[in-house]
Every structure is written in C-alpha cells, then in structure tokens.
Length: 286
Image (cartoon, rainbow, N blue to C red; front, side, top):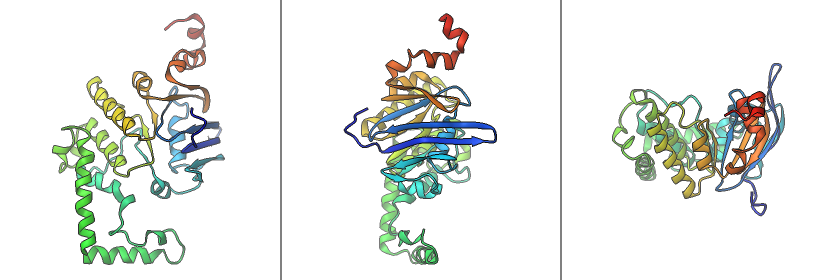
C-alpha cells in the first residue's frame, strides 16, 4: 500500500453479531483509490456481512466506516449509493419484469439533474416533499432539459452494455427474467457501473458461471481496473483473485488473518490452514 495516498475507504474495528455469533470481529482495513482489493475466506467467514455493512444494509454494533473521509456507518443504503458506492449481490438481484435497458437506466439515478430537481431537499425534514413535487411537475411537463438528459442517458446505457460485447446489447429490450443466469449477472454489473461509482463492491461476480463465462468477466474486470475503477471484490475463484487483485484480505471467523499482495497470500500458512484445515496444513497435503 502506498502510504502517500489517502484511503478512499477506511474500515475501523468493525463488529457485527447475530445472536451469539460474531460474524465480523474487530475488522480493520483500507482501500486506496484505483486499487482492486479482494476479500476471501471460507464460507461463513463474514465476507458478505462486511459488504452489507459498507453498503448500509446492516448497521455495525461497533466500529466505524469512512468513505472519502466521511463517516457512513448508520446512513441508509440510498444515501450511501448517492455518495458513490455501488454494489452487486452474491445472489444476483435484477428487476426481472424490467428490460435490460431499464435495469441499467435505474442505475443512473445518482446523476439525474433535470429530472430530479432540488436533490438537496430530499433528505431534509419538513421540506423533503418539495423536491418530489418538483420532480412530478418536471415529469409531466417534460421540458427540453429533460429530453436532452434522457437522450444522454440512452447513449450511455448502450455504452455500458457494450462493455459486455454481444452478450447484452442485442438483448437490451429483453425482460431480465428471460436472460440466462450469466447475463443476469452481467446486467447487474452494468447497472452498478451506470452509477459511475467511486467504489464498486462486487460480491462473487462469477458465481455460477462456467469457465468461458468466468474468463469473459475476468477480462471485463481487468478492463475496469485499467480504467482506474476502485473495486472491492468477494470471490471464491482464487485464480481470478490472484490475477486481478492488488491486495488480498483473508477472513476467518470474522477476523482478518492475513493481508497482502497475492504472491504473499497464496503461500501464507494461516490461509492454507483456514481453507484446508489444521491437520492438512500441518502435513502439507494439498
């Protein structure tokens, strides 16, 4: 990690329990701008819980999360998304009765200006309704600024779909529920990218994909990395993790047991033990 850079994301002493189970136990780590960091670990090690805490779906019992030097633990998911954090989910979530095109356009809400006037009022008590009224009037009147913005969004929507070659663009008018599993996952990633996120959280983006599909997504994520996207990734396919990541954080029982570049992590005895078990690690069995 380059000490001269200010972290985009800071997680400090994060704790989350469910009943008697401590899913996240004093976890701390940073993510630098333009960095790709992967979180790995055995099933149940707390990886997705960490994502849910960062994205606001859960609130921590203790600790803090800072994004761009602003504390975000305790904010609602929509506020966190507006600040620039986009995510995908372990079990893909698309709007099945909306088209691919519409799914991606939904992701652009963060950048709407003409069609969402007075956004600063939305989170203010008493006067929040004024922005909703203004949005309704704008939707009915459809002034030129709205039509211009819609044309721009349509163009950008096609650009996002084009990232996936011929997988999505020819299917932009297909309902999402009719897509293959892999294309639903691609649609979810495209929707997240449409937000122009400052931080992209990807929860097992290649889960359920065959080797060919996985290789395609790896190429697409590598292209995002080359563009300078900051990504935090959960993935069980270690070949992808080792190829794509600048750093890897290994969790076990909600705690970080190792952190470093892929070349160091893959030979770390604590990591081998967590994945293979104490006896197999001790005997060198692979």
